[in-house]
Length: 157
Image (cartoon, rainbow, N blue to C red; front, side):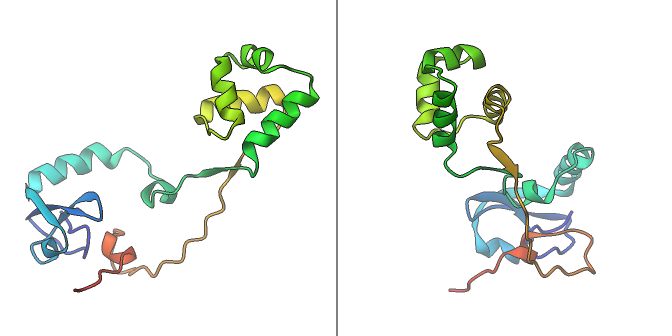
């Protein structure tokens, strides 16, 4: 198993809270967070096997959504609904959602992607667009894994 901060190979380490996220680190890096407990290699190997089949995009790893909402999302929906001479009640029936939910959406609430897709299909508009990702990272290519230490700058007190 590897330290998630520095990338060092470790047989046992510490689980710490680092910037609000639990991470497994070596004893040297454990001073950078609040220690939650000890971790042995068996636990980490099982976790590694569980995650081996999952494909993770860079956006998921870095916590960025892959899609973004267009500007004036709620206004666009309302304007097009009104141009089609639909009341909120009628629109809600067509997309199979409660009227109160439609009112929330038109006042700025962003619903889950499934609801957005229903709205897009019914109104024949695009409300989400694929996010263009620009990643400016200096990655140590001698390592086979990207660690937190590659992307986070630790400030010493």
